[in-house]
Amino acid sequence: MTAQGLPMVVPAQDLPARVRIHEVGPRDGLQNEKRAVPTEVKADFIRRLADAGLTTIEATSFVHPKWVPQLADAEKLFPLVADLPVELPVLVPNERGLERALALGARRIAVFASATESFAKANLNRTVDEALGMFDPVVARAKDRKVHVRGYVSMCFGDPWEGAVPIHQVVRVCKALMDMGCDELSLGDTIGVATPGHVLDLLSELNEEGVPTSALGVHFHDTYGQALANTLAALQHGVTTVDASAGGLGGCPYAKSATGNLATEDLVWMLHGLGIDTGVDLDRLTATSVWMAAHLDRPSPSRTVRALSHKE
Ligand code: HMG
Ligand code: MG
Image (cartoon, rainbow, N blue to C red):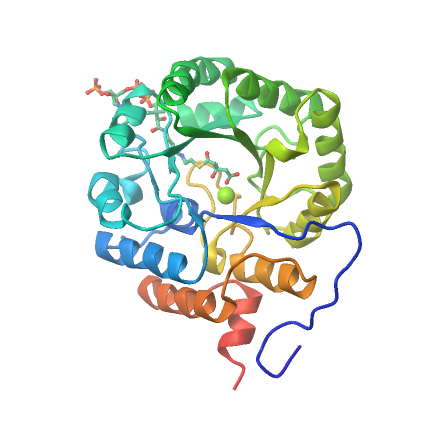
């Protein structure tokens, strides 16, 4: 570590020069908080994240407000941040959600599929195929409007009800989303059970089935402390889009064993130490997570936030 609280830069071979961080804190993080966060605080959170150099910030969800009450203020929040010079993707499960998002001028949406039947039912009240059928017109309409579409696939590496998830089951859902017209996919380890070999197997299998690495992002949770090891494996494979949540906020309201997402600060510490450019100012980002933790009345679970905020 350098005197300024930055990692010493020691590049390693065969890694990308730059990584795009897809920040999910305001959506994936806050959707799971017990404490209601006022809309103005959420807007301030997004502004601070943009100010810290994050360029893709998932802002909220246009889902049924009874299913995710924490994000029921999407109509109020989105206009408060729409002027920011960053990408602000929003989650949209169906045509009703798409209408709400388009009415506010959203330019990036994400549909969210599941690799398993149990989670599709719990999260979307649908079978896997019914959910894909629900997304089909959403993606088509979004593409007509030149709106960028991300397709999440949850439970890619394990499921709390079904246990191990066969790779072919994940690949089938990924291919269906690509065939629909999604611009990119995000491979979700929703309960954080993946290990690096498993990640590499899934990425290779997807490539063999015609899904290029350039269309793949990774979304790890740190339940078993594997998120950074899995990220490094994905980077070595050529992945350059990594999801993370400021301060390690979040989980998933419909997957009880999903603890925190990979913390953006932990990710940035590793990437900067490897000499990989992210555009993120780690001090500003850490200050934002410390500020947010005060609003949530609990400390951030991110090791990097803890280390940097106690460095004197
Ligand atoms: P449903 O109850 O089956 O809904 O829920 P429905 O289609 O039968 O419609 C019932 C009523 O809801 C209708 O109203 C609709 O208009 C209304 P009524 O005619 O009865 O008056 N409705 C809506 N209202 C507002 N906005 C909407 C909307 N849709 C329907 N968009 C539904 C189906 C998909 C809506 C529901 O299950 C839902 O909203 N689920 C979202 C759950 C969610 O957001 N979970 C968290 C996502 S996190 C995740 O998936 C993992 C991820 O983070 C990756 C990772 O961490 O690994 C991505
Ligand atoms: Mg997540």
